[in-house]
Length: 535
Ligand code: KIV
Ligand code: ZN
Image (cartoon, rainbow, N blue to C red; front, side):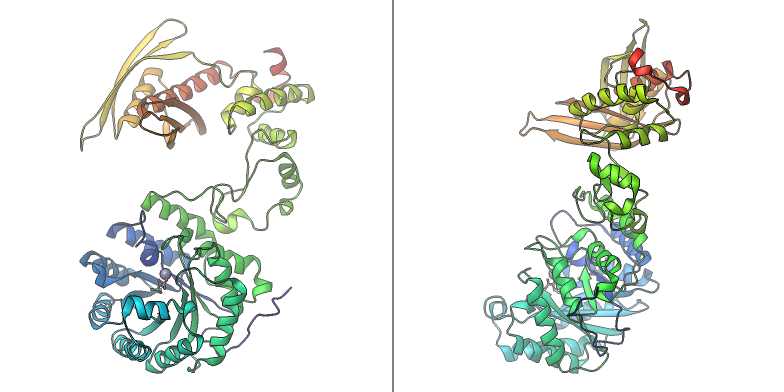
């Protein structure tokens, strides 16, 4: 079905009627917020990823903010091959000139000038009359037009501005040379129906040439940034300003991946599309997390860890019959390798059997009854069940069983700027003891290397997570490690007031699991019968 309110006016810019430009502001609105600052190298890496993703315009920063911001914008502008490089500037000559200089080497450049227009901002922030705002906007656009290929004008706090005055400022900015008119919901105040009405009104009342594009820029203070952006598109906006993972001032901006996927999945409804290569959405989200050290919430739409994960037995059963039962898009379309059927206490036999078979086990019905009962008991104790737990269950072992190794000594020391060292002493159930020392990038790496040597088990660390359990200075640290050994991932977990010790326990759990698996690795898993019942 098609959106009956969809505005098909073709006079909204030089873009094809259905094409919506994606203007990414991760490196400006996103980067200027607490916890998301990046150094120049990180910004360049992110910019290259955003270009590969296919954003139309990349706002690289605010050059007048600092010499480093200037240098970052200049470096990105020179590196972009086909994406328009954009720099932000207030409507003051110093800002605009600096933006122009930073964009000098861009193949395609845009200066984004902004000025508040709402009564609240005019009176309390700027101390300017309507006429002064109008004059400054025109002067700013005219100056910017001499320094870049194109100019965008933003009326900050547009959505709380008198519509007639906003239309007057936009008309003047367009006459002065702005080819994009951005109407931000700076404080995230609007609702979808309201913003749609406002954009439709602006499209009908702003005097402009045929090449001028209307743009939305929505903040998420009420959790409506994506809904409001899409409503603006429905009303005729043909540029959406958004950020990877929805980062940005306060509660953030509209999330790029959500806006883009809504238009892709519900293309028939919106009648619009973007140029984004959606298979790069997840890699872009991961890169931003990596560069800023900020995790994405687990249940975040499109890119969260749970976005394509199913634990409930009913959902897993449906998914195994037909993925369309509980998924409206394919994980591979957003760059996620596959749907994950997470095995936990809500899972059923169908998903358990499927995973066991994928691991090479072929339990008959009696074995399956036994494994399933032990699986449920284990799932009551553990939050998530991993492949190595399942393997142990299928082989009739207790996945929580300790041994054969015990850790009897652990010494670590970190050396400022020069890595770390660790010594471990392990005692085997058969009585023999081994002590080994190793160097590593950090104490956890050094412990892992020492355990590797002591047990003669090659380990490649693929995941290391630490989180506090409880609050305050005496909170325990919980360490979760995943290490690769002979093409398989092995998981271990440890808890201690000392996080290195917690990591050592987690590493010990891994070497023990591998040792246990090796001790029971014959007969081959394919011939698994009711082992659980007899073990
Ligand atoms: O939220 C806002 O109004 C802005 C402008 C600078 C576009 O970020
Ligand atoms: Zn903003």
